[in-house]
Amino acid sequence: MTLIFAIFSLYALFKRYEDIKLSTYQAISMSLLLVGTSCIHVKEQIAIILMLHISIIDIKENIIPNILSVLIFILGTNYFSVDMTIETIISLIFLFILALTSIVSGSIGFGDIKLLIALYIFLGSNRFIGLLFYLCLFLFLASISLFFTRNASKKQTFAMAPAIFVAFILVIFGG
Image (tube, rainbow, N blue to C red):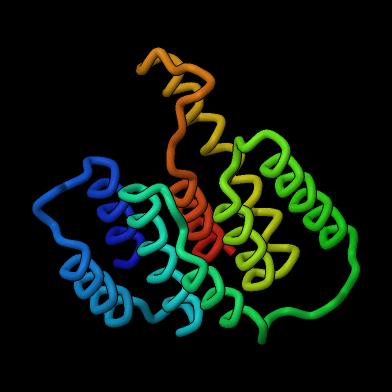
């Protein structure tokens, strides 16, 4: 049920329904996600709700609030262990490259970088590699579709948080 609701939520986000107010949407999503999900932990349910709200805010305002990223970071501190495996090193190198790219070229928002760091702490290194794979796949598909449908220029931007949200959902339910 949660996966169906997440798909509906993304459809609603991309169609940008103006008649759904953010506060009503938040109440509906919280109740449906918490009641309808029994196969995942409560922390993951809360993280899904936070990610959904981050996606909505990023689409509407092109900003990711720091407080929501911090909440995901705090939720993930129980799972975080310092084990320097090859996956951990690869993930940290990738995050460093993303942060450096964001600072130098401005191509990725710094809110997205902070969100990815919080998700790294939340998911751990093994599951974060899966998130990066799905995220790269979605961003590749989005850039191709933008190129062919909108006559996109290099200056055109789009919200990255919904792609992070879908990748997060796939990692949570896919293992």
